[in-house]
Length: 336
Image (cartoon, rainbow, N blue to C red; front, side, top):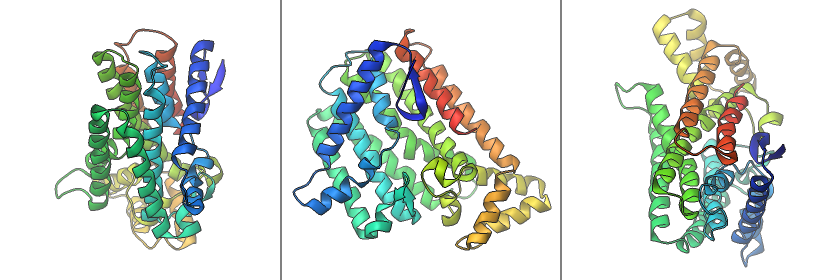
């Protein structure tokens, strides 16, 4: 058993392990090459998060999905570079919107160079992703553009909030399908498609990725409340401080509205207060960490991860399928 990729995923077959490790190494080289510029400062800014590491969750999914076709096909590694560059670009923009101080255990780009440089660097990464994508053909361009539209739409809907009468939890889960599920789904789709897998297999893996992506983000929601910065690599409670409602907070609000318990109403009021105050922010985190709303969010994470696992049923048994199933377990483990 060898540990590779995010969350200590174990691969139990030497050939699969070799394919995955070789593919991820090629992706890493591709990321460094794609983030180089003739201007040294742009290279430094563009490689800031690449060099900080990261889970490489999406490239790993590309490599595993490619196992259902020809994993050595020429489009597999470039497509993994495209999805990771796109993801990295969104992180630069997210940190500006969230006013984050830390990302992947290092100062965020906006903290180091300011918001303007961070936004423009994200744009630079989007441009480089598009350049690589163009070599993969018009179908790949169409798929990526549709996913990117969903990603941006999800971000806009999160910012705008639910319309009157819409259940905030349902709205939020739809947001996550766009913001996170879309790009994870494309990672699985590209891996299988570039490897020449059957269309039915491509469809199964795309649906798996959509659900796994939502579960992954829900686990992040739980970690944002439950972990410290050493565990998660970023400042805890960022969304709380910015007033962005994540699933534990939405469940808290629903409980307060449904049952009116004084302690819940009081905690909602604290959540809605000025959380730029460090003491108040710490108090909200402390109370949310022991509130049933956090456990309810964990259960939702498990539900989406199990749905992802169920989507894999039509695929042939083998080490690649087992690894994808273990990804579901790993996502759930992050939320515990």
